[in-house]
Length: 356
Image (cartoon, rainbow, N blue to C red; front, side, top):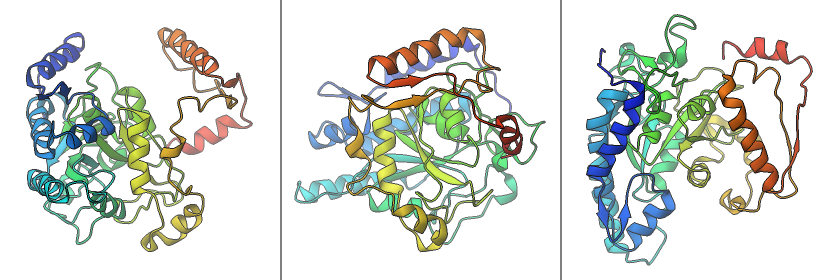
């Protein structure tokens, strides 16, 4: 799929300019960069509806996806789901909790199965037409929480197992080459590239990715969003195309830590379809969920280890001042930073993980 991209220095300003012109404004509320909490507050104050929110994201996708190639399919039922959410809100009139993600659009990596009209294809034409008979467990939990399933995000095809060296990160046959919205010539990383790109470019509120080895955290890092890789077993892999059962996990990609945690609270938990992993991990889920730990003073007294070798060896020198600045921020927030930790046999460990 060929596309003529503007230069990397022009891409983000163009996206920003587009956002300015199509922002939905109601009573001083604007959608771009809004958090889940801010969106829900706008719902509560009748300054925004889920249908308006979905329409905004659909317009974003129509304009930006031809540049960024981060979304494979938009759910044809997304607007109907949003309308249903709005109707439920009108009928409820605050009598009960409608769900922690009620009316919030969520994008799914194209390896997470949905029982609707969306394909689950790992970005490959080989699986076009594969509409699964049952939602993945994480999708069941999203629907129960009231989320709108927005569509399927692109990825490195087959988790990049189509080719480990000859196909670039973020490429799949169905969407083309995923593009970092901040640097068109940069590496979007993978394999959950579309999940991160779409959130970064305000094409969706939050998304789900999957990780075997850095497939959530790497694209999140490269596209300047927040990716949360849960411990294996906190989230069920049932209904998700597998790679390695001992390593696979499903997690949120969002613009803020708070948003990522709010989604995590919804998707964690025991699942008999992924019995061994979730049974082992479920006992560690805190009563009351993870939102209780969203404390602005939460770093005080915490000891944080910094392992520089070998992870910083390949970084561009321009990144080091920023890295050191963030370490200073951690210290200012009260954390005890233990720098230059060494991990025994790290080169051996890294070698084993290269194909994951």
